[in-house]
Amino acid sequence: MKTQVKYPLVFAIACFWLGLVLAVSFLETPFKFQVPGMTLPIALELGKIMFGISTNIQMVLIVIMGFSFLFNKEKLNIKLLINFFLLALILGLEKFWMLPILDARADVLASGKGLPPTVLHDYFIYAEVAKVILLIVLPILVLERKNIQSKLVLKSLKTSH
Image (tube, rainbow, N blue to C red; front, top):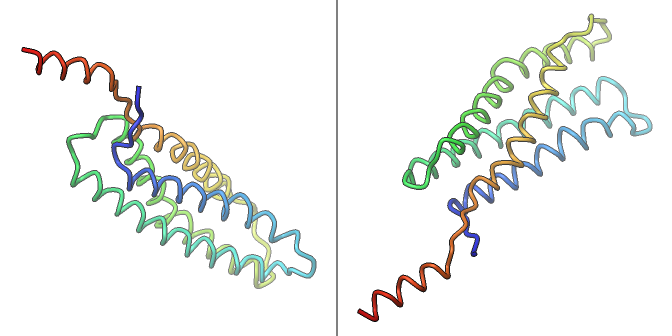
C-alpha cells in the first residue's frame, strides 16, 4: 500500500496555514500580554496589525487552494469541497464581519474608554479553533492510498496474454 498526495499544493498550503493560525492566534496573541512593559494600547494595536496581515495571507491561500481544486477537478470529492467551503466561510466571516468590529472595539479600548464585553470575541476564538480542526483534517483528506501490488498483478496478467 502506497500513500500519495492528490493535491500537493493544497497539502503544503494547509500545513503552512495551520502553522500560521497556531502561531498568531494561539501563541503570539496570548503571550504579548505577558511581556513586561507592554501597555494595553500597544498590545491591541499589535493584535490588529497581526490579525490583519494574517487574514490577508489566509485570503491569498484560500484563493490559491480554490484554483488548485478548479484546475484539477477529477480528484475532488464531497469531503474536500465541504472542508474548503467551511474554511472559506469562516475566513470570510472573520475578515468582513468579526475583525472590523473587533478592530473598532480595540481602538475604543486603546483610547482608555471602557466597553462592555462582547460575545463576538468568543465567536472569533471559536472560528479560529474550527479553522485549526479543518486545517488538521485537510491534509488527511488529500492523501490517497494506492495498492501498488494489485496494479503490478494486473499488469503482469495483461502482459502474459
